[in-house]
Length: 349
Image (cartoon, rainbow, N blue to C red; front, side, top):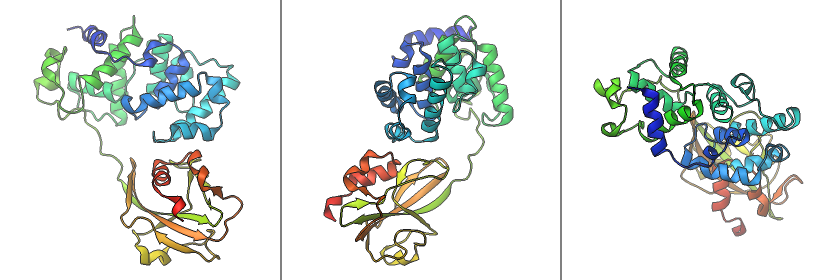
């Protein structure tokens, strides 16, 4: 069985029509690959279309403000991708005169670009023979060849990359790479793949040995931690609110939020006094407060679960840095905060 030929034939029939497959422009391909890191196509597609519309060239993206880029990215998660996207756009526009590196080795030097992304851009935009290995490719190779080495181990990462490099079609690397990724996404799916209609089933070790459900093997994830967040929604008589930009490094860096105080447990209305208000605007000020949600809003991230309470705090006057409640939605914010702003009736205060 000709593995690569079967995949390419399958792809020619079953591939999805996607806008980034209709171009060899490295800017569009890079943009799509960054958006699709840890994101499914159906979720990423609207963001890709929005970015292309608002920033049709790398110069447009580079000349934007970071806040506007983060705002357009809002809801897609893993915000470091957006920050890296913006940094790299400025580098390419201003240091490289708008010209993307045209090979795997130099693409790998760009911020936010790892082995997979560099391989994808190099092969699709510049037809370089650079094998891609993403989650879909790991799954196809592990099942077809019956490999039980953990895909997220150092040994596994090297072994699968080496194997993928021996299989790639050197005459049409772009087509092959997209074919194997699409095959993993649509045919060799994580759960309940229809193996009976698979064009490479006769050579699949996992199917022959009933290992489809157990491959690929992945080491257990890092332990998920639990945190208790208390957002102080401070609003004054002039309808201004405190809305702060997160300066510290982390998943929400440079996004906006209401003043945050962490606690050791989930607090109820009578336990507001347990919050440490030191170094907050409330430390030496009179105010009234009410708990907006008795039941925690749970926000699950890859490595932590946030149990969140919103406290509505009414105060006579806030610092000049406060923002009109009518303008809050203009600022880039985590989905957790954005959803609250859309949900809460500020006019009721």
